[in-house]
Length: 114
Length: 120
Image (cartoon, rainbow over all chains, first blue to last red; front, top):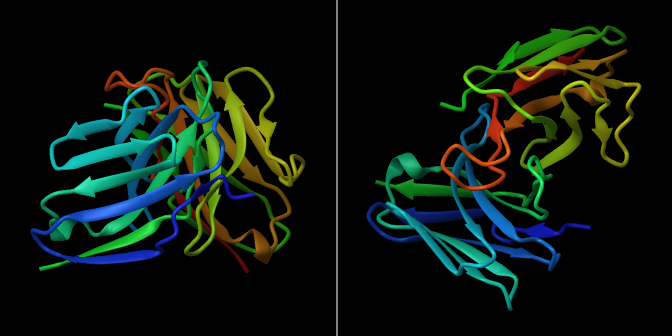
């Protein structure tokens, strides 16, 4: 049962343009969502997160949007840079205690062409 | 801050032997550590959750007698793959959390660089 899904395995954009990565979830109990970036043979790096009480969170070039009614979130990267090329995972969790389990999507390979 | 290391970064072992992977939080005390496994072009699959001083909680389908987890301190957790077989070959990643993220958010997990295990 894949509770977090990233339906696009890959995305290719031109440098300077916007990258939009999408993520859908099925578990309505999830209340916190995160995006991670991963390079080959490395561990994921935390990028940005959003609580279910918000619908938008922005950090520099990265903005995450949450649509709870649609159980959908997206990560926008503007402007995209070649160094952004990596696999992006969205993850979701629930609960109030620390160390809650993360459920990951399958990842989207972003390629930013110079 | 929030650096997690893993050792070794890659290991090749013969079938039937055991391999130990270490995960350390270098500049913070981790209340919880997680072990993941990643297959090629697949998502990270949580194997187990480990709290310092207590038994690990394994995900469904993960053999606890095969993947031994020891969390001896707030900065160190180890995963031992016992009697390894070629199908255990994978990329193993640990993560650590302090509860509230260092950026002020919740639940951020900080990941190690991973260990590539190849069983021949």
